[in-house]
Length: 375
Image 1 (tube, rainbow, N blue to C red):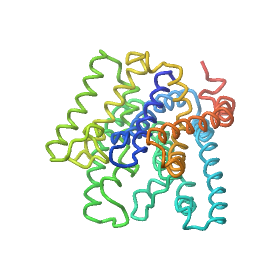
Image 2 (cartoon, rainbow, N blue to C red):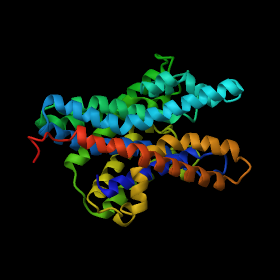
Image 3 (cartoon, rainbow, N blue to C red):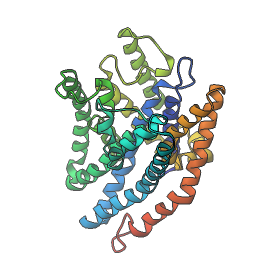
C-alpha cells in the first residue's frame, strides 16, 4: 500500500478521535468526525477490490478463499481477541473486588462479550437493548468491516469480469435505496427492537454497501485529474451539507461541516452518506497517484501513525474513559493530549511486539499468488 493511503488511515482515525473526545459544551472535538468511519469503509473497498481481482487471477478457487481469509485473520484477530481477553480478565477481577455497580462500563463489557466475540456488535448497537461501554461500543464498525470481508470476496470471485463494473454501480445505487427503505421500516416501527432511526441506519451494515462499492469502483475505473477538482468536490459537498442544514432550520455548527450526527436533516441519511463516500473515493484516487498534498500524506510520522491505526482505533476509546475518569480536574486539553499520547504508545507496543509478527506470516503462509502462477 502506498504511503499516502497509509497516512489516510491516520487522518480517518484522528477525525474519529476528535469526535469521541466530546466532553460537553465548548468542547474541542469535531462533530463531523464520525465520518472518519465512512473513510475507513471506502478505503477498505478501495484497497481490497483490486487485491481480490489480483488474487483471483493468480490463485485457484480453493487457495483464493483460504489465502484471503487467512490474511485477514492474521491481520485482524490477534489484536482484537487479545484485547477482548485482557479486558475480560480485568473486568472479572475488578467486578469481583468492587462489585458490579462500582464499574458499570466493565460490567456492560462482560454482558456484551457474545456480540463482540462474534463480530455482530453492529446489530446489538442498533437495537433498543444497547448500552454504551467505552470498552466495546466502537467495535460496531469493526463488525461491519468483518461482514464486508465475509461477503465481498464471494461477489468478486463469482461475478464475471465483464459484469463487475455494472455490479459495482448497482451496489452503489442500492446504498441510498437501502437506507431509505430502512428509514421507512424503522419509522413505521415494524421492527420495534431497533433503536432511533438515524443511529440505527448509521450502525446497520446494509447502510454501507455503497461505501465499499464506491471505493472499489474508483480504485478500478477512475484516474486522478486536476488537483483543484478535488478541492472543488470537497467544498461542494460541504456547501451542500451546510445549505441543506440551513434550509431545514437547524442550528448551524461549524464543526458539523453540514453533516452532523447522524445525518438527521434533509434526508441526509439517504443521500448524505453517498455524497461523502464519493468525495472520499475521489480523494483516494489522487492520494494513490500522489497528486493530492503528497508533502503531508508522505510524511514519515503520519505514515507510521497510519501503520498503527488499527491499534489506535481499538485502544483510544477505553483510554479516553480512563483518562477522563482519573484526570477530570485537569484542563480538557491536557486530558485529550494525555489520551492521545497513551493511545499512541500502547498502539506502538501492540504493533511492534505482536501485530507485525502476524503480518509477516501473511506472506509466508497466504501469499497473494501461487508460486507456480506468480509473475
